[in-house]
Length: 77
Image 1 (cartoon, helix red, strand yellow):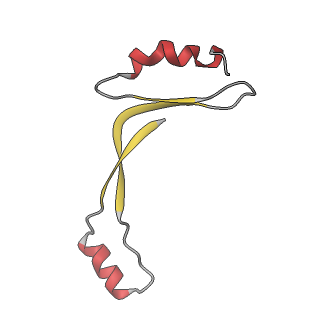
Image 2: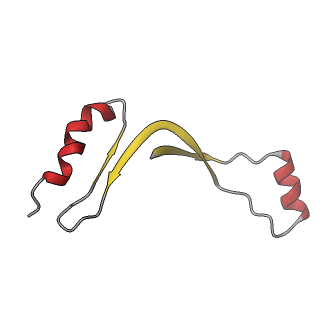
């Protein structure tokens, strides 16, 4: 699953004109842009805890693969 970065929305001239013209037009507060990072989420199963791993500069996803693969086999207490 790709991750996204949230950035402040900068309205275009057309969006501003439409909002001025129509009372029902709402401008978004944020835009969500592809971040170029991946996230792996594991959930479900009776005895499974689930987990989430995110690709970061400090800890690339490929370095986390052993932990991800072993997650369903870890004992739950």
